[in-house]
Image (cartoon, rainbow over the protein chains, first blue to last red):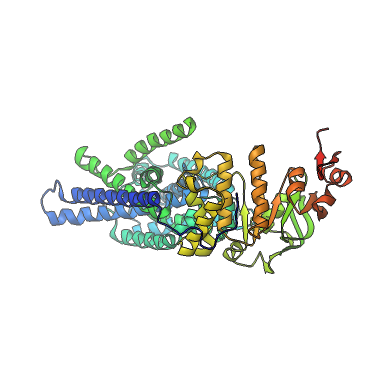
Length: 337
Length: 252
């Protein structure tokens, strides 16, 4: 079957089907972009009570927060899926939101809800981000950077610690004054409305830095889908790349969680929808698709909540409800195969 | 040359590779045989940068594996692995193109495309290039993986148990491909094999391991002797000559 290769055996020719597929991915991404623009326009300009300028200013902030959160959640979840080789996980398995709950609860527990509300949001945000990032960096360097290098061990420890933090928070919550508890539980529902401007800018900056690190690694991420042994065989410095990506994921997730609350479940939905929608395994397509889908889900959900159902802030309910159903679908479909 | 100098690897208290000094990657095909747990795959892992040695040094063409950039080594050594489950849906063409990653970091040049085309043509995969890997049979998937290894265009090719899960026809086909890689393309092939007879029929040199040590390292014919094989596998093995080839009979 093998023959001596003729020097110029086959001229590279454009492969029609592959380029059609690629064009398909571009068209699909563009269509999604169009939908995002339409949603943004609908959110900004419809149903304006009174001054348009005032509404635009307020709503512009919500749109900005939506985009930042969608970018953080979309990028981090797709990257997390690739480095763990598992598509039904979210970075929350590392105990991110559990840590968020713990820190918030601890503040209220120790200083009371008045102090929690009076605290400088910037300080609170910075502490949350620092603690979450610190936690994940310690976890990943200890379990992955060292001799063992096991992603699964790291995930397992993350789950155990996450459960511990969650239980510990619950234990503290039991002993809280009902009023304090009310204030606290309000903070646990993700809300995109009325974001603090300074925090939004800071979060956006962190997420932008994260994206700047991920973009040059998109092709390397493609190779990582082949699994660690093959990726190493193809010259990927697996340990360094994965630790870098873990750091990026934790910074992005920490920053966005500290801004709006826990929304990681959203990542599971948008990432898996993105794999189906993008029509390609290449991260150059799946990552932006996941981000745009994130905007569609968040802003679409916000539109329905605010304009159709007439609720204020809490998006978590919708995200968790829809996400839970979608997760069940994913698991059942996997089982059926 | 791929050289191991006093290499050891321990997992927990167990020594899996025990002070091995060995030169691999001479011309032709070298087969690595031995019972389960002899340390063959760990040895491959040490050369392929998946396992770090506790002692000793591994070099490829004089480059220390521990300190040389991974990309540099990936241009010299290609590794074919088994059972590698991929969550994403890739086509044969996608997979083969990955073989060029060490050379172009994913941005294919005209030269890269040329290598990919040749590898696809060598393996007779022209008709399958747009098929998804999960739509292929085991034998076809194996050929696609071999095409990726060829596209990587390395001097050394390591094959980790390439005959696993293949039927008789595909076993023969794969071993003929391996032979031709060495004879026609001039690659230095090192392969882990469980089937002693395949090793005897297609390899030039056989390295036998047991308990983490090299217990035999000789031309294939010299290893195919009852007393050597009995020592390696710790069981009685009869060797008969059939049409001038040594054949091991181990069906008690």
